[in-house]
Length: 248
Image (cartoon, rainbow, N blue to C red; front, side, top):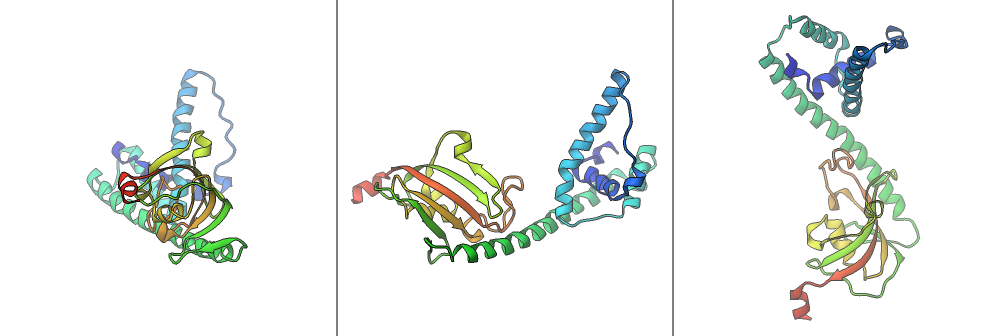
C-alpha cells in the first residue's frame, strides 16, 4: 500500500488527526536520545511538514472526511489488512483529487470574484482613477514624455503585482532587475494598459479577472481563480516593431 501515501492521502489523514481535540494529543515530551531517535523524529517531522503544506488546500476546498474512517483505513494499511485493493484505492483517490480540486476552485473563485468586484467598485470612486470601456482601471502616478508602445512592440518594465488584499505575488523590484516581453504575449489588461503609457511613465492598474487569468488558478495557488489583480508599472523602454516603424 506504500504507493497510496500520496499528497492527498496524507492530507486526508492529517485532516482527520487535526480534527481531533487537543486532549487526545497531549504535548509531546519525546526526547531524542541517540541518532536512531533523531532519524525517526526527522522522518516524522518531514512527513508532518508535508502534511501541513497540503492541509491548507484541503481546508480551502471545505472538503472534510469522517476522521474515524480515515484513521481506520490508515491503521488497517499499517497492519497489512486493508479492505480495499491498491487498484481500488487508487481509483477512488484519483476521483477524490479531481473533486477536491474542482470544489476548491469553486470556493476560492467565488470568494475572489466577490472581493474583486467590491474592490473595483471602491477604487473607481477614487480621485484620479479612470476606467476604460473594457473595465480596466488605471491611475497615473508619474507621466513620461517618451513614445507609447503598440501591442506588437517589445517593452521593458519594472513592476509589482498584488492581490486585492495587498499580498505580493510577483515583483521585478524584488528580483532586482526589470523584465522585457512582447506586449501581445501578456494578459489582456497589460496589453491594453501599457499602450496608454509613455516611456518614463509610472501607472497603477487594477485589472478585473476577465482581463487577467479568468477562472484559472496561477502560480501554484498564488493567484486564485477569478482574481482581480493590481499592478504598479514603470515603462522604462519601448522597442518599436519594425513594421510599426515602416508604417510611420
